[in-house]
Image 1 (cartoon, rainbow, N blue to C red):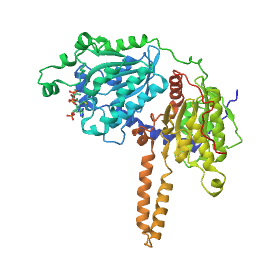
Image 2 (cartoon, protein in one colour):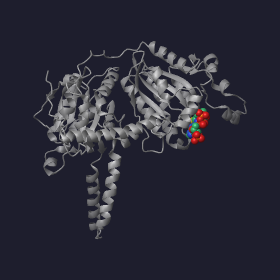
Image 3 (cartoon, rainbow, N blue to C red):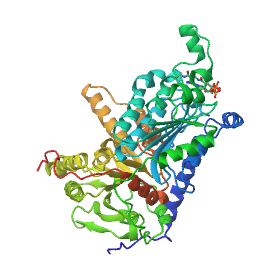
Image 4 (cartoon, rainbow, N blue to C red):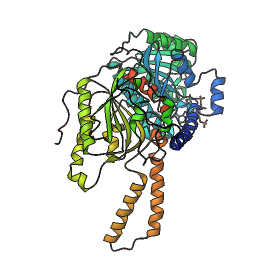
Length: 532
Ligand code: COA
């Protein structure tokens, strides 16, 4: 065993300061998450209950094995937009009859569960996760379909939802739809495309067009039940495989369907692992409120991995990136963690080598972000920093082992890419409330804009207004700062959620377990041309 030591002084004022700053951010986060849980607000929740219906999260709770955790994904979707936080949809990973499934549930208390552009992004991301990790999908359906005022943004791309369901099915990944209410027009294709369909008596409404539309189209008089009720679909159309007498019965039947899937994970579960030697609670005191102050990522690794046991790779070479091998909840992982923030040529080459090794050995990779990007300046350009950064990005892009990313602090510039940012398809990406991500820091960005504007004025022979420049800089700085924050980025689905640092080991353990449902093999070759 190579157990990491710790230099973290939990009695120091810095520790107390860092901890207090993170706790304050966690409070803000909790307030926003509560909005998602609150759905459409008291009035609509009350009305929903009066109709004898369960809330989306209550349905999920009854679906899951008792006392098992639910890893909710993208809970802050739509944050900062005109739509309700959470985007009228709950998605996540939970265990049903011992099977890890991807679950989605419409929240009918928010605009009738209608889908807006953020709902669509969130649903497509959930499908992507199910596909990559081969997780059976259970959809708990009750939705008003497209959010009509925003139809222009969702109608055409939204077709992918139904394509995804049948492609999952074609890949042998089971899909189950449980219909609790409205599932009309395009929504009818959720049960229509699913492998297994359960409908709730006198509640499910599954038709291409409701009675008013039918009247308009053909003049026919009809009613909800005869057009698309559960009983009609179970007895007559055959769209429903199972007829449930009420909501709990539907959820019970969904559990039975999953129990009979004969679903097996590609990899056996590892034995119960040792916890880290150090308290996870101390993760709150490591990242400084001011991200310019560096911190040692080994202090984080020591609180995440089994037994705090970490074999560092090339510790003396490229020390601004820590790389090494560990286990997390029993799963082997290779870790790349930024130490001093900046990535130099040595760090980039070391990363490329390390990523190739992980691929040769079929070991998943965990990227812990705290980077301001690749080093700039004459010396570094002449030393080939572009070639070396490209080498790292090439290795990350063409690596075939599963990747996990956690944004702990800064994640700026191409450093975000090299460390497997969102566009590099990590299987999961989470942010701590302390994280910030943007093309560069707000001050730097505002400064660059100002230098460019000044040069442009000089080229035209115009005078430069310094007072206006200061005002503009302050405004740009503030804008970029707010757009770099985790809640903003999470709202746009640029991560799978903002998590409490203390939950990181648990969340990553759940992700690793989900990942091991699907087979994977590292790239033995197949990298792009490495520029030497
Ligand atoms: N787009 C935008 N807003 C919608 C919506 C949609 N598709 N469906 C419902 N809403 C809004 C309603 O206008 C209402 O807003 P308000 O409370 O501010 O007046 C709120 O969501 C709740 O709807 P309500 O009709 O009161 O809820 P309900 O539970 O009684 O009925 C539905 C829910 C979904 C059955 C019903 O609203 C409906 O039929 N919606 C239209 C369905 C449709 O045809 N969609 C197009 C499919 S592509």
